[in-house]
Image 1 (spheres, helix red, strand yellow):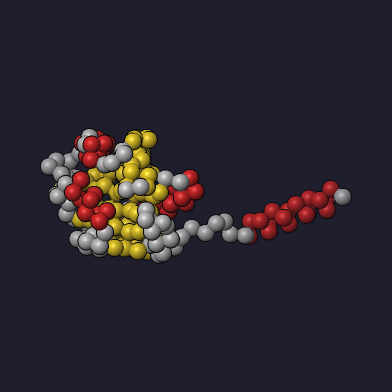
Image 2: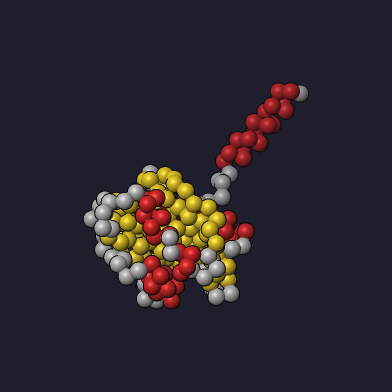
Length: 192
């Protein structure tokens, strides 16, 4: 009896092991127009022109005009009014800085510039095998509250900010931030 029960349990475990876990999205690598970095997005996401969306113009006006490189992608399966977006911005720095210092300098005025800004958490981490500084926050966008992340990387005298945002609803945040985390892990600066 014990042998039969053990055999049945082994069979169930082997069957469970052969069923694939929830599939992660297939990614495609994209290089920014200036060749300064590559990053991968789920194949279902749309890479959009920076002139095609008011959100990009708003972010640029709030972050400054010294961006030399910008790339944006949108999850078309998300809400049309408040889609999940991810933007990568590169900018020259006057001197080499740590990701934390870059994030603190850039973030000093964030609360003044973003409507309904509320810091949730910030800290240092290793992302894409690189030192990084991150900041999770909520902000308002028209009638929508967004849950957002800003991740800061530095390479010599170049700073990179990656901004991700999604509607602040528990199931949307859970799904979208799974995708955003996977995208962040694919970031590769080229050193140009």
